Length: 249
Image (cartoon, rainbow, N blue to C red; front, side, top):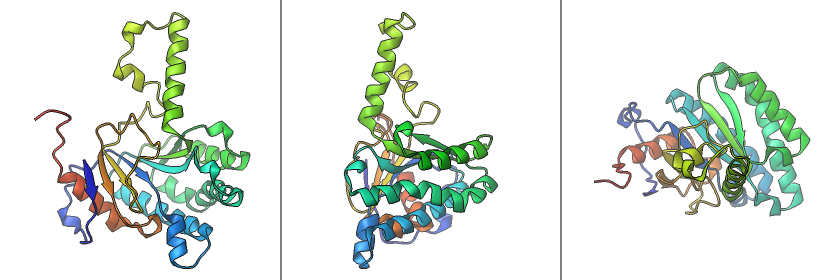
């Protein structure tokens, strides 16, 4: 179902803490437009968006969310100006340099999905260091979608399944939704129950197309740098007002 955000402030007491989405996926959109409104360069919006990640992650920990997948860089983002791409791909290093101790303290485990090997070495090094330092943490999974595209993910899954069939390790009769899901990048995560997109855009942009089949969608006009803890509460409250029937009555 599609959600529109409200301007009202959500009181903490309104949330049902027994009905918090286990996995929330977010398309962090609008950094450049936020900066333009303030006559700032686009990179200033990306820098401010990094601060929003810190606030949202901390609040997700407080709410006992199990997994948070953030669309940080898509396979289509390479089309942007080279200087902006380089800046965005340095953000993981800047974010983790600044906030990794806090992530460790809050028992957060850092993971990624996407074509990680095609990212610059400096991005890989920073993220791998964070993965190593948080690999034994048992709290929130902070999952960055980096150089991620859902169509590529699906093609990768089909290729792997085809190879298994060709090698005789798998028969076509065994292929069902459950098995297919095990070949996706998110095989070890629950499917997202809530998808949030900021900036007013209302499309998935090649994001988790299989995994979001039964997620609730929440679209807000707020640009990502303006999204905060109260904004997350508002999205979750909307989610809690829905009846999730999964095709039934």
